[in-house]
Length: 315
Image (cartoon, rainbow, N blue to C red; front, side):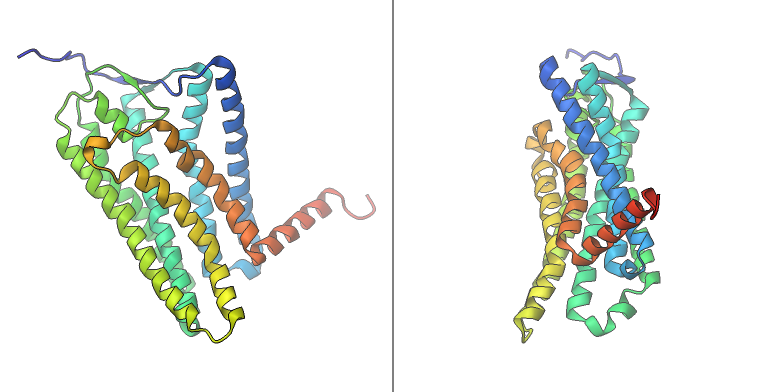
């Protein structure tokens, strides 16, 4: 039996996108602008929620928590993408690659858990409004938020250890702009069937499990909303859920497409990963700002305060 090349890899080359220089430069500028706007918008949403007392409610606490995740989630991969676009290839150590893998999937899992908690918050607000502030007390909200982060970072530990224990000796060029699971598996010369199965089970548990809980929450919300006697009450109930539903659809459609797949079809075009890494973190604060009247009013108030500080009366 012929043995594979036994020179084990200690660093990888991220090949990024094979684009012409002019196209790559345009894409670099575009992604840079989107990334900067994303970070700024999410920081601004957090600032508005923290400073405006009338937004100190469970729903806005979780929106602020989502914005906090959306600052760090793209930060794990987008700088690598920008560097790969600028330099064509980027060297990354095995330890750095595993760290990026761990934080990328941990933050994605945390966001999935948080979106599920947000659907439960809407369920309690609409189906049990009289006990809403008792059930969703500040202490409970903090515990749920911490649980999302703890759960997200714990769930990925075993998978990350399994991936880091694989041997990589089939070349060192990763056909991606970050250390994605499918790209790493492709380079491994170890037996990967058990790791692929663990990844598939984990993806089903996190993505499909959370999605199912969200669907169950909204089934109850729709049933309760349809029983309202006035159209105004129904419209108000649906409007409070619309933003969350749009965010859920954006997040889960791309993630189900990318990760809840049979092991034989794990490799998906890296272009699809741009959506959750770059597009969705930008759209989330925009969606919540445009569709929520309280947030819109708070944003206008914050902008007016800022303009007053910059141009005080009589200056």
